[in-house]
Length: 134
Ligand SMILES: [Zn+2]
Image (tube, rainbow, N blue to C red; front, side, top):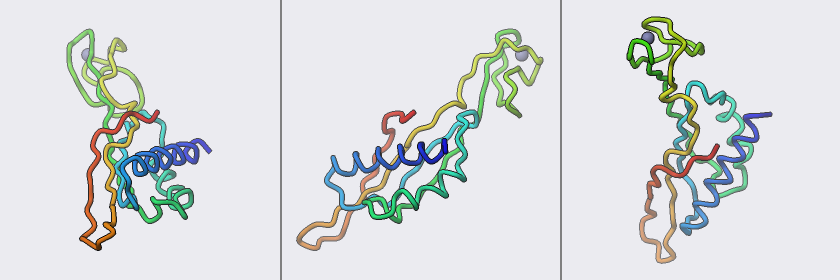
């Protein structure tokens, strides 16, 4: 149920932002997920249409961007991408590593549409770098 709560959180945040901007519709969302965030993109993708039904975000296209887990080693100074979930330096196997990225989970951008009352073409607005959700 973890992912269901997260999906609901993503939706609520998107709806709030869309309402603030006077949008009629959320057409697309890009969500960034770190490899160590513990969030399964597949589950969020499955739940999203269910929770978004009947809201401004119904039918919105959901895209995920995966952020790799990277560490910096205190012993050998190497910066590298973790090949698995073990927190150690892939170069020298030291455990004195600092996690540089991989735990993130946030809405990166959102596309909304506002239908003008005078029937001008609907426009889309990108909302980059929304605040972190989790
Ligand atoms: Zn090292």
